[in-house]
Length: 292
Image 1: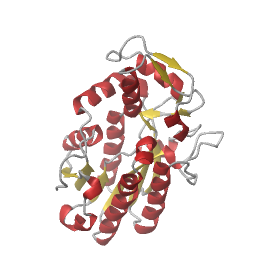
Image 2: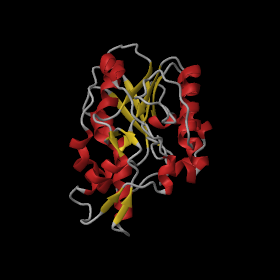
Image 3: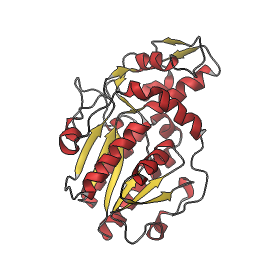
Image 4: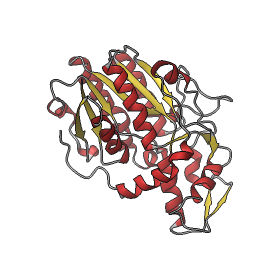
């Protein structure tokens, strides 16, 4: 099976490509950079004719960035995936698309299941939910994978605040489940391998690391990492950026376990590796022209 991995310079694309190349699959990368100026009508020339599955590894998990640049959020979270789905439909290609817990507004008192309808409360969640609905209409052979919190995002947040302050505000009222880049790459690889074996298991799935936690408690865990400056004090308060965070971002992940045999792994065990991946990436992303 020929798998085309759409990626940027982020850690997920790099780790996922490395994992997939260690399998028997035929894997090709498609680097999408400078997405704001990318001509999506040229997609026909980017996708090899013998592609069987497109994996869109552009992982959008930061609602704060989406609010700051809504045009890019729209193109990354909706326009690009829909263009991929339209091309896939015309050429009998399957598509694996990432979404997130931000499609939910967090008002539910218990964890969300995959069949719960989206009710987004921010720009990122809005376009991800619109994307999900469009894919269900356009392309029967699709996998939508909703993820929990990006652990790397909050590690970067703590690092950024620590560079200029000894206090970081994180709300204890917001609960979710982090997921590491390496763990997400493991899960995507497992799904792809099942598809390669002929599994017709299309639909919507959810994955996040084992153990739900508040943002305040997550801050305490991150500040204990080697490589984070000593003396950082975490306080239970809600900074402006955190008003975009739903109170409840927890998801039930039994469907993906029952279908693909994918078990939830503890995100805590990947904390140090996540910090190392961020350091290796150096914050570099979306800087070259689109290529295939």
